[in-house]
Amino acid sequence: MNDKLNMSGVSSDEGSFVRDLRGQTGTGFQDRTHVHKDWYAKTVSYETGLAAIESDAGQREDILCERSDMRPSVSDSVENYGKFCFEYKDGREFFPTEHALEQMGTASKTSTFYLRSLLKNPVNTKGEDLYPRDRFDAETLVTVCHNALRRVESDKKFRFRTYQDGTLRAWLSESYAPVDNRWFLEALQSVIPNGRLSHWRGNADTVFGNILVPDTIIDYGQDDDSDYGAMISVGNCEIGTRRISTSPSLFRSICMNGCIWGQVKGDALNQVHRGEIDLNDLKSRISNNIESQLSLVPAGLQRLMASRSMEITGGMKKVIAVICKENKLSKVESSEVLTQWVSEEREHRNLFGVVNAVTRAGQKFNNASWVKFDNLGGKLLDIDDNKWSNILNRAESTEDKNVNAVFSGSV
Image (tube, rainbow, N blue to C red; front, side, top):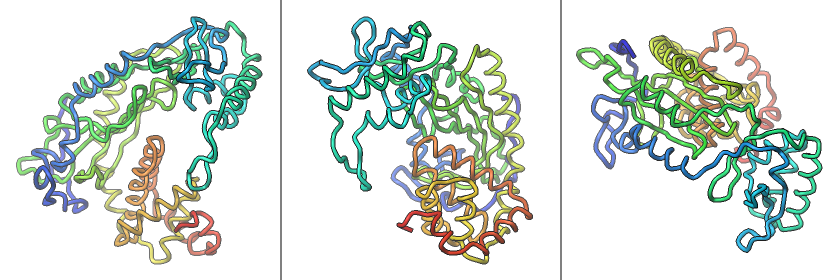
């Protein structure tokens, strides 16, 4: 970045308690950051992150071959006897993940639900296995796959991501254009040098997380009177679960358990994995997105503070129900939002409290839901007075039975 981000005078009281919070590694923020010392100790450098990705990459092989070269089969090996697999033409067996099998179903235009159901044990309402899938289930799955794949040209090429442990993690089209996670992280390092990887999630194929922007890029002013730090939420998947994304944001502080207080996001950059991707152009767009959005995001703090004045005098459960239903959250997701408001935000009977409850709830689910909830939190901050009045009126007129139908029976 060419110019420092001016944070002088940007302040609020949201999350200020972290400054004096005593933890295992010390009290308050790591020097020149707004990240608690305990959480900062859990962040890692680019070099550590790259080393982990490099180690994972050494265990995999992308096989570009014709459809007929991967044949549905049942393993007869001692260690995997009776398990469904795809047998490559050289005799190697690869055992698909649910994601890979779903991609195969999509490519062959067959029911992905049925395919996945035969691959895993059925469970009861408590999540306990009812019974284990056996060889007969695997043979049924072979028959179903053969039936589906016979409508896909035998010489059509696909990209199969395999690992030395025998897993098949992706069934991709020939035109799919994966962007290597090592390149992605190195590109980010060139834009945000000396950043720290925080809230890092994912596996060998997928990266999710935040990059904390160092004080070498932020101008806090002579007296460091700003209350905010900056970071970039990033993501990339080499096997088709999500797009490349960078989303700059500001945050009030990060607590010792990683909870992000007072986060306000800018506009995200998204890039699909399709066709030929010009990496030089992509790197330039990543850089422009980060530089331009970080300079604009401080204005979003006004929206965050303004959300405190958008009060809720009626029933909070009704308002949360209307917002959850409007944004198509499931019963489990809606219940978690309500739970987070009750346990952590109940002193905030306003839009501010709802936004915090939503972003807190996102931390309780998987990676994809985490991103979805963070985006929803940003979307809610854009609600104007007219939209807010409409939500309150709808909440007031909603019958209790319809409110309760939005949530699971446990809340």
